[in-house]
Length: 124
Image (tube, rainbow, N blue to C red):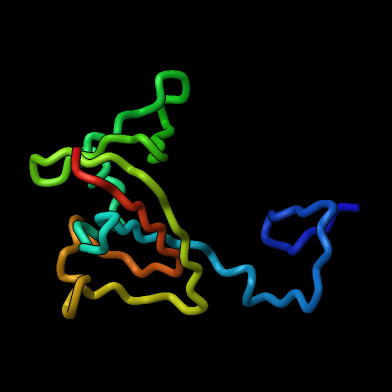
């Protein structure tokens, strides 16, 4: 059975209990790079920052880039290896204004987000 939600999204084979339009909000992400021992190194929501980190395009799919365990990231001239990741889903979009706290360590343009992907790294 296919289900259509009127937004071009078709879902199949899933049980929807108490499904509401709130679930259908767009997902926008912020990336957090944190040292395995806890220090925040970088936040970004701008794809151009991927170039500065040294994240290259996939050989086969030139419009794809991947960060996964073992990926080397270059942050301020220092190389780090990704050793883990964690994902937060946030009910309401965060404005990501960067005025306070660790958000001040952001890079690139700041965009609102409702998903944060944290990559934990160690220094190479």
